[in-house]
Image 1 (spheres, rainbow, N blue to C red):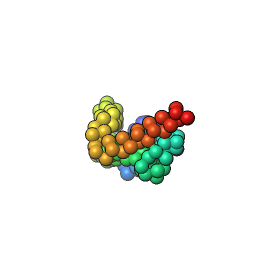
Image 2: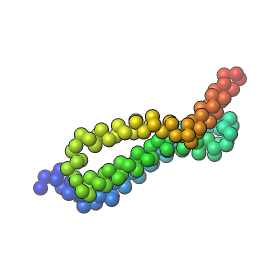
Image 3: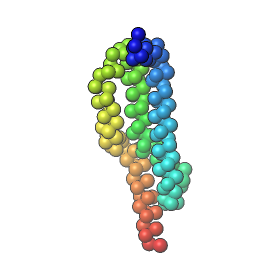
Image 4: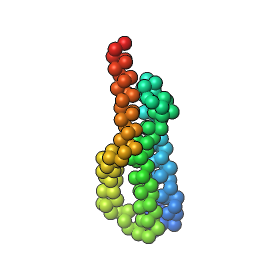
Length: 135
């Protein structure tokens, strides 16, 4: 048995692990991005209606609402593939599925709570920038 077939067999035998590990990785990366954006925007915390905690909550609403559902959807797709049809791993449709992130990013902007969080964040950042320029 060649190494590629062994890898596919291992993936088929452990579908939950093969689906959960990428989710854990994705959640970690998303959380680090959100925390980084929050930390590097600390000048704007005082201009946000909720202070630093509200700013962080809005960052999670804005980015988490966009990327976490897609990450969970990808876990479901990966679990299906590893459990029922391992041959789909070589399909170009898998790579096309990742394009759904960009589509969902555009559509998430129409959700009221994401739009409102974005407005609060943008207004706080603008106020911080204007205060910095005026000083």
